[in-house]
Image 1 (cartoon, helix red, strand yellow):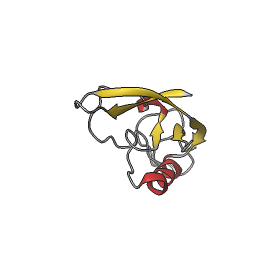
Image 2: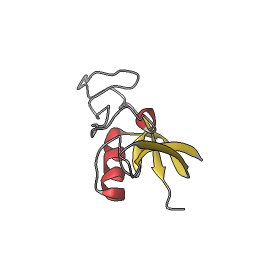
Image 3: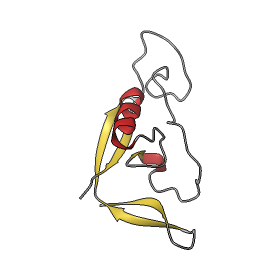
Image 4: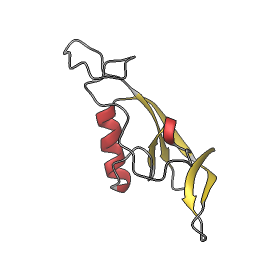
Length: 99
């Protein structure tokens, strides 16, 4: 169980609650977007049932966040290189389980 949030409370505040999650590592950005879109139709890295590990419980973010990497980013880098020979960067993703 990991603390995943924020969940909105009745008074408009935010609350982080422990949830059962499946941690997926070594996921390419395009696969993470596909899993996210199929799980809850909200293809963003911050909200919904599929979240990137770096934003999973960040209560300071209240708006939709794009996935931090794409397939043009080389492994170990944060900027797009668009080189065919580059290995694609990977993400760690949390998928919230229904039970």
